[in-house]
Amino acid sequence: AACASISRVPLVHASMAHRHLLIFALLPCWAAAAPVNEAACPDTTAVPSCTGPTSVEEYWVQLASQGHYDKSKRPACGNSTFAGPTVVEVQLYLTQVNEVDQKLGQVTVNGYMRSWWHDPRLAFRSEAEGGCLDAVRMAGADAEGIWEPDLYFDNLVSLHTHESRLLEIYPDGGVWKSEQITLTVKSPISLGKLPYDMHTARIVVASYSQDISLMRVIPRGGAVGRSSSGGGRSGVGIIAAPLSSSVWAFGAEEGHHAHRGFETPALVEIKFSWDYVTLEFHYSRMPKYYVDQVILPSLLFLTVSYIQFWVDPAAAPARAALAVIPVLIQRTLSNQVYSSLPEGSQRMWLSDYVSVTMILSVLAACEFGAVQFFQMQEKRRAAKLAGIQKAGQVAQKLFNVCRQDGATVLEVLSKCHACEASDDQDIVAGANAHIVDEEAPDAAEPTASGTSGTIMPCRIKSERAVRYGMSEADLMFIKYAQIVFERFDQDRSGHCHPSEVRRSLKYFNIFLSTFATASMMGMFLRDEGERTPFDEMKLTLTFEQFTRLLSKVENYTIHAKACHRGSVSMVAKMQGLAPSKRCDFLARALFLVAVSLMVTVFYLLRPLY
Image (cartoon, rainbow, N blue to C red; front, top):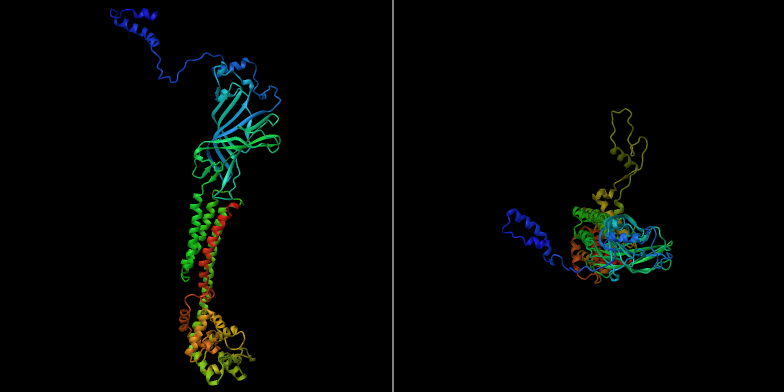
């Protein structure tokens, strides 16, 4: 009516100030008469008439009007007798796995800890019963006025509670609580199958002050434990949001993909009359990092160790580098494996794998050492052969003396040995061996022993050696050949068969198979004007022939090896190789077999770790 009376005032005859006053007076009237813009308030509905609380504050007023609420008293067990335990359901909504500490065996997660229980004292009328709300939602400090279960984490390392806290009360007295937490728990990690390891993270929830006679803790929708062993796995203990990680794959045993989320049941156990609910989820390692950074490099450096077997042993610096560097790299890989792992005594697949690869690399380096040892031995033996060949003229003189005297080489050698001097020879030898100072007044007469008044026996060069012009140095190599020949002349017949000659030639750095040795003996004897049988394995050599053969053996060894190339037995091939080359030949084959066998066995034994 006021708006109508004001609107009837004519504005034409009014002054400017009067017009402004009339416009300001009519603004509330026009606003009240404007229609409601439903686009600004979507889904608008008429407010129904109801009785009961419409806010948290009104709910607390109503609760106080019903009588005193004792938050220190646990809720009734349905029948208001407080005779039975209060059932509390728990569940973790997992949003993120922050860290897996493999050294300390700890897992840090982020999520929402949820719990459900029933408190009849908090009941109110629902909307279906004429009430105004179907749930009273409280956040933060508003939810601190009711009873809550005193839950704790049994394997807790650290806990950070965020300010995000929500509590809902339903008309029947049901209570749902959700609280955001960052939780670090102790969870054993078994690294035996690293890098193909799978683990189970466990979060153990229990009541701190209420045993099973007062409170039963179970997973959401799970069963109550009925015996000392608990209730087994039941309900839904963890609901996980989609999880992603560059190291771990989550939910491996649940048959779900981590990017879709997963659910896991919980384990209920009764320990000392207390309920312990274990919330657990599984996760497995994505092995690509360790495969690319440890397993494949170890195989590649084993290949480097293998390459050294094809390098000439004379190139010692190159072979030493190829032998030692892989060992150092394998040791570095082993240190890298343990850099983020506990330094304990636990057996690990990857650690054993790297250790075996390092052992193979060390064995390859030891093979290089063996080759160098054999090479030094071969050089000494080659020097003895060169000495015999250098003393070829002396040997020819020796053979001529044998023909003149009609004696064997062994007999002539025994006569060319140094012999014991006679008395006259002792005095002459002593006089020649010492210089007496004639000006010394007390100088004693020289003797063979160099002491005054006593003549000691001595050895001098034999008359045969002097007559034939043979020095002790030249005869030394022939005597060495005599020792070798007699060592392998097992029947003491003065003749050596091809197998015995082959073993004798090894002491002069000549390595042939038995068949090649027989062929060489046949060529030599025919060049000496002797007839040889068709079966060359029946040939024999005397010491004189053996010595002559040594003086020109290089003329026959190349032809003997060429005659027996092709399909020869492995034994013959090994006999024709020097020990240093034999080591390399065997290492080339055995090392490949060892590496292949190692990889196969390790992957077959992986489930046993």
